[in-house]
Length: 207
Image 1 (cartoon, rainbow, N blue to C red):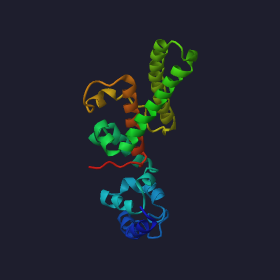
Image 2: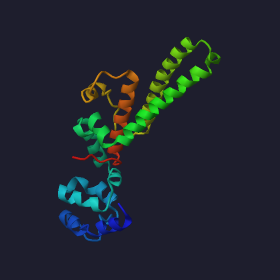
Image 3: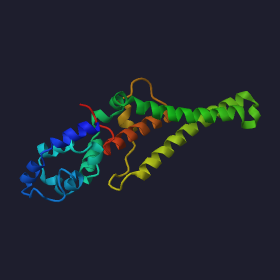
Image 4: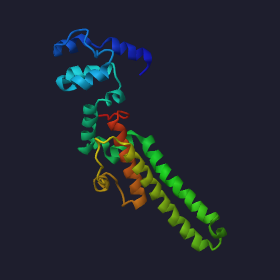
């Protein structure tokens, strides 16, 4: 949203209606117009949907997730396994995130395989080294995905419990033959990243 359009949206926000509904004075602090997030932290549970929706004129989805109740609602939505956040739909809606996750895992695995092919034992015994390189590449791909997963979990707030492995749920959205374990790990990592970004208002689902 540009600064001009944001200003225009803010000017259309009817703070008086919000304050009148709650029986609050027009000079109430924090003001719903100039301090919408602190205001929502105090009064979110008292407002009907039509008034809550009006705050989209003065705040972004990411700003609104500073309100714990809103963030928890988004988290609970992800836990309901909505179709919009399953693998097939998420990959179609956010292809750049999927391509990045897939490319990251494969790139690390390729580098490990190249090291085994060219540096390990001087590159001798091509049959043995070739098999080792493939194996090391697959192992390293899995390790990098797991490291990224653990790093993301460590950054999450305490309100988000550790997620169960969702591979069984995601399999039904993946056509064709079963994927390898490393490919499944990349897919699971992608879904966790999508859901994490949705929770914090960095992604919005389209209906």
